Length: 525
Ligand SMILES: [Zn+2]
Image (cartoon, rainbow, N blue to C red):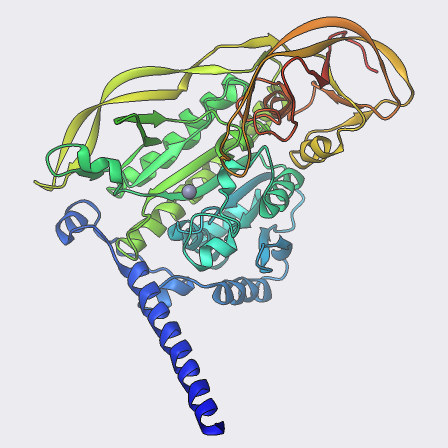
């Protein structure tokens, strides 16, 4: 009996060992597998001859792991204690501490603040490796260290640590951190956004990688196509972001970075992604969604860009090229910031959203344009005509006057907490007060019957009317003459596609009045 029992235990242990070994082999295979032919790699994406001293390049396979990351940043901190500080900004769902690295050299001169983030999606490995390379060069190479005289730089190397550890796009609960920047339902989103709001940067880049071999690409050309561009730049087309900031981001920051990359033969383009809509492939250019970082950061009065490097699913293919691209873009942004310090400071100080319209919804321009891609049969670049919906050329659809303030009932603590994380300043009414306000009545309502990104989305139409209403002490006031007022519009207007009502954070019904009001008088409360 005893012996049999022991045998059984031995068998179970062996089974476990076998499972673990196959899992490791499998993971190794996944991370090294690339669907790309050698020909295409050599012709279009040859490795770049550059020395990179980050942990992934000290080994043949795999990427920098969590422990190597911690050792790497701790070493920098030990070597440069006067410049480098490390803050642990929160714990991932699986209990891993997420570090923020701040590079701040003591100086009496005014500095611009720059924020870099990598690894918000856990399978975009060059984004994290790239920001580690930026840190290394800024600290260890005198050709770059002068940039620290004029800049304070905050870097989150791996925003989604749980996803990164298993090379999965999503957070541990299966939700997408870059669709959660207004609803703030994911644990990580809250501390990542709070960190961003507290730092309040002038310039920000969220580094990503994109998937160049997509299912829907197989129906294009005879044997399918793959993407052509090494790097794509997404800046916000959101109309609540002042036009001057949108233009400056594109015409100065993006342009300079593209010039640098192109000088190394690295190809660039404005961001474009595809989508299958009832059998047709639609391409979306740019973005205006506040739920994603590019627009969310821009609405916080920041020169903001989301960078996409061609890399998801490629394992270590062209990995140096990809990491070097991240590095070159980051350094170019830092140089552009230093070279245009006063202009950037002025632009952001004086130009925050003074538009007297709140843009609630907008329409993207639709056009058919040629797109350069790589044909998989001939392995040559070709142009194909595609339908593009361009968020960078949006026009306003539903607009309302921008109120002097939004007033929110004092029982709405959960949306107030989210507004504060977004960096929106919220005041409170000091005594009961009767006020003339505009109220919203829901006159058209539907709700999805399936969850999307963790929520049942609501679609509403409202009519507004003027009424006198008694507001209790402690009611919340969001004045609109503040930097992040665009984020208040995007979250509080009921029809806004990424708002609290659309995302079901604030539930409602047909014929309900909303607990949000518009105060139009130009007078402090
Ligand atoms: Zn991504």
